[in-house]
Length: 69
Image 1 (tube, helix red, strand yellow):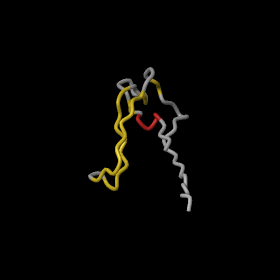
Image 2 (cartoon, one colour; image 1 turned 30 degrees about the horizontal axis):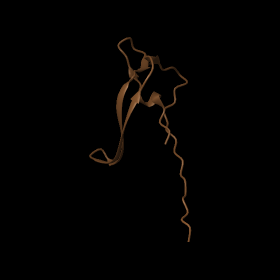
Image 3 (cartoon, rainbow, N blue to C red; image 1 turned 90 degrees about the vertical axis):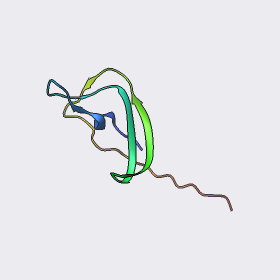
Image 4 (tube, rainbow, N blue to C red; image 1 turned 180 degrees about the vertical axis):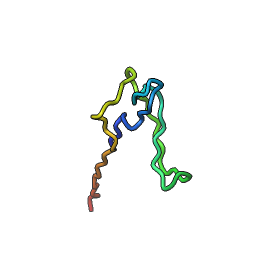
């Protein structure tokens, strides 16, 4: 899974969307009360203003593993 940092953006005090460094917890859930997988990540770097080029969709890839007979 690739999760763009822009998904963690929010509207700052000055009215602009920003991404701040810090710890986040990402959850893959069946519902809001049924988390199936949790990943803790840390965003690093300076505070960044998010503009119209922001990425608001994550991408996934599937890999099929075959066992030897």
